[in-house]
Amino acid sequence: MSNAAPPAQGRIHEFTTHSGADTVELGRKLARLLAPPQLLILRGDLGTGKTTLVKGIALAMDAAEPDEVTSPTFTLLHEYDGALDGRPIKLFHLDVYRLEGERQLETLGLDELLTPDALVLVEWGEKFASIRKKSTGEILIASEGGDARKITVTLKE
Image (tube, rainbow, N blue to C red):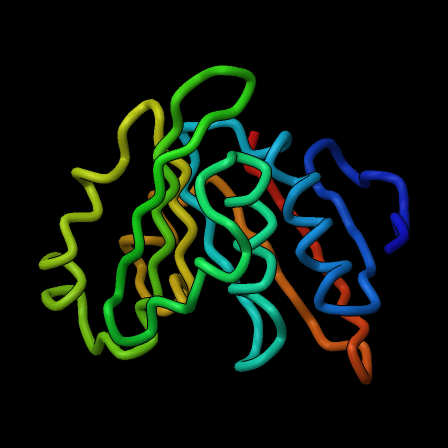
């Protein structure tokens, strides 16, 4: 894992990972950047490692072991209780890929999840204007060939 470039304008961070384990480790380190309340869109093609990154974030928060974190593709939402710096934090991992409209999205109760102690990570959130509007940033994961990934974290000021 290497930091590909120094942070650009303020709150953009770029990283390159070279394996799944590397991506988990980056997630663990990124947890420090993602102080609640946050709603972040996880963007990337199928299989690029969005859930793998969440495994590391959950590990850093002592919310779940990596093998306990799975994609919420069919359940839509997984909730974990954790902490950062002794502060209790709720980690919500959503996958809205299968939802087809804002009305279906409303049934998830996203607004109720957005509490001061919440870190909400939404796979495929870019599909919905309401999520884009509420988001405090995004994590873009792009395949660089093989197991290498370029991970760009953009946090709104």
